Amino acid sequence: MAENHVLIAPIDVGYAVRTVRGHRTVRTAYPTRLLGILLLTLAAQVEADVYRWQDESGRVHYGDQPAPGAQSVKTTADAVYRKVRSVHDGDTLTLDDSRKVRLLGINTPEIDSAGSVAEAGGEAAKNWLKARIEGHSIRLEQDVEAQDHYGRTLAHLYAEDGEHLNLELVRRGLAVASVFPPNLKHAEELAAAQRQARQNKLGIWGDPAYAPQPITGLAQQPGRGWRRWVGTPTALDYGRTHARLIFSDTVAVDIPKENLALFPPLKSLLGQRLEIRGWASRRKQNYTVLIRHPSALEALD
Image (cartoon, rainbow, N blue to C red; front, side):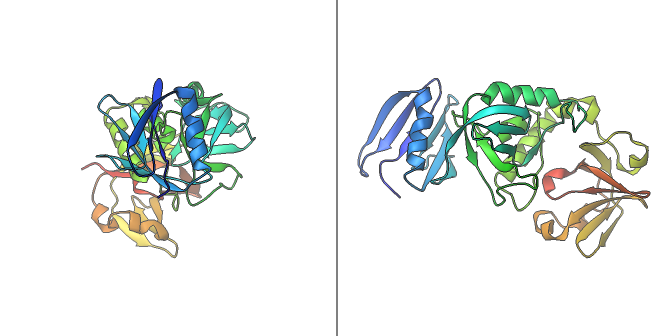
């Protein structure tokens, strides 16, 4: 561990704490705008474990020594702050260096654009993210895959005050967890936030447009896009690349075999009433929902 690290709590008037050559701790007040610069300076100098926690008043803290309940955040030399030029929708934005960024681990409803039709909740997600970070600096945290097949940078985003924006969108019901292995950073946190938002019927989870529909009735259901279904699988089948939960002669849920270790034993799901979330595809008269992570499937019994 390198010396002279900075702990940052950028709330209104923030402060930083330095461990000076392993001896005493020095607490220094800083205007909030300077705190991101301090973290950027350190990130350029060292690779270190940083811990994040909240105190009783809700203020966010970072430090090089763990406190009770602290979470480890890995800070590397490429952990830099960039300014957000524009927010396109609830999960896509452009940085001041012209990179297009897709938020990892989540999905927000579509907005009206040349390539998509507006979905319920899309403008709400975009407006929240736009008000929160457009014109401000953010920190990017990447996972296993640096880009998607569109060439967009994949990242978890953190505001200048340390708030995890991907997670906050899910907490507010403005986004759903959409985890694509091997990118599994924060997957459990996102799934837990989603369960809480669903229980409280926040945002998407309380919108009639996303009320669960019987999965066996997919053929009669209009519309495309992300949906919720309920049903009880009656059989299990294994193909060359996927395991398949069968709900009827024409409807199944597919899980890639390479992701099965993330799920409970599929046999344990037979006969259980499940909620399935995602996108349906059709081939002739057969309908399939592909899920890659347990956050897209929940037992209701």
